[in-house]
Amino acid sequence: MLELALIKLGGSLITDKNIPYTARTEIMQQLVGEINLLKKQNPSLNLIIGNGAGSFGHQSAHKYQTIAGFNSDGEKLGFCLVHQDVLDLNLLLAKFFLKAGLPAVSLPPLTMVATQHKKLVKTDFSVIENSLQAGLIPLVFGDVVLDKAIGGTIISTDTLLAQLAQYFHLHKSYQVRLINAGNYPGVYDQSGQVLPYITPSNYAQIKYAIGQSESVDVTGGMAGKVEEFLAVAHLGIDCWIIDGNIPGNLTKAVLGQQTIGTVIKASLD
Amino acid sequence: MLELALIKLGGSLITDKNIPYTARTEIMQQLVGEINLLKKQNPSLNLIIGNGAGSFGHQSAHKYQTIAGFNSDGEKLGFCLVHQDVLDLNLLLAKFFLKAGLPAVSLPPLTMVATQHKKLVKTDFSVIENSLQAGLIPLVFGDVVLDKAIGGTIISTDTLLAQLAQYFHLHKSYQVRLINAGNYPGVYDQSGQVLPYITPSNYAQIKYAIGQSESVDVTGGMAGKVEEFLAVAHLGIDCWIIDGNIPGNLTKAVLGQQTIGTVIKASLD
Image (cartoon, rainbow over all chains, first blue to last red; front, side, top):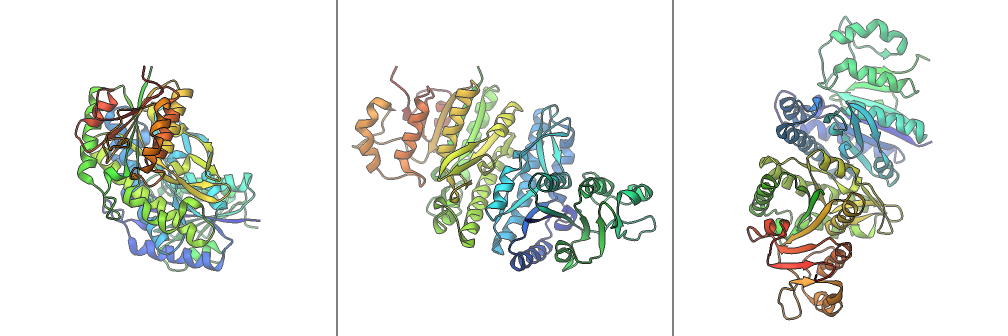
């Protein structure tokens, strides 16, 4: 069975969220170094990388309220500015992959996904699938998308990777795992401790605490992320939420080894 | 009937072909200025812009012989480097559009086109069509594409725009014109004069002269460009080959006014 790891490199991890348009290039380099080693030691492992927008995408997205659609000329321009900003960051990240000799290929989700009233109505992941089959590493990202009802909106990296996880698991028989590397050690409980596991059965009890915790991600926050991943976990795909700053953490999660962080899974079997 | 102008901004026009990775930003600004004025005076005019790769794409493309496919790890990396280089140039161009307030959206052809032994076997232009309908200006470019037989290859901007011209003319009932703005005054005859017209009936006599003339474009040269455009002209779509350096030339061609250059059309009616 083909193995596929979907790796999210969070916007708060690879950019400085407090300074507009500022990348954390040393972290990018460290993460790409880990991925390079992983790929060298596991040549048959398929990888899809998705990166958050961090302090690149959120400036124009906020100014023009791009997630709510576009109508005026200014809002249309805003949509295009957000696309440009997220592509800029993605290409910067891509350069680290290419410099390490990894065949990473930037593929804007705008070309694959369409929505209607913010709900996905079209997904075409054939170019991602064909890239994997050709031995390349698709690089995707949270992006603007065209919306049949409201002009356009934004699809988060989390939603996109959750869709991709389902697609490759259900339709393409890949053995899929999903790793979210962020700028936080995992999902906190009410007392500020990292929850080692979240399953559908304990989620109801901890949901309130997550909802109250500090939001670490602009599109949806931690609660949104956890719910996105629970839907994926339901299919039998384990999802890791780990601190990407700690060297070796990403490697361990990809290899399914014990790491500090939160694992979201269907049940504690 | 919806009007659509497909505008090719040649690689030799917007980059310095003699110095790797060097854009002619003053020309980019001038051309975007013309397009901005055109769009302001003709708000209902639909535009698709395609740019050549010039001294950005051809370095890695030549080094890794990307047009001939990929097999080794080095060639796969080369494919990704070419994609990165052409995206870099396209994003640089996009910034001039956005700065002028034009809602231009970069859409990599890699995500829309697939080939087999370098022949197109799949085209999906829905994202370009939806972008036009949303009032945006799609920006495309010569790009790498995945090839079912040889891994990957390159699709030239000329081929892509010819495909788009046919698609919007035949299937979508747009009134289409195609303008190629290059770093040359048109197509030369044997004596070095610019041919005002090329039609299927005079092409046989002048073909030899074009074949012998200095190649102005790496992917296919001028003869390839003319043949690509003759196939489009056959459908009733007039194609202009003009010098993009001369202020006002692009505007005149888009408006169908007399310009210095070569018009390729089905017949001299």
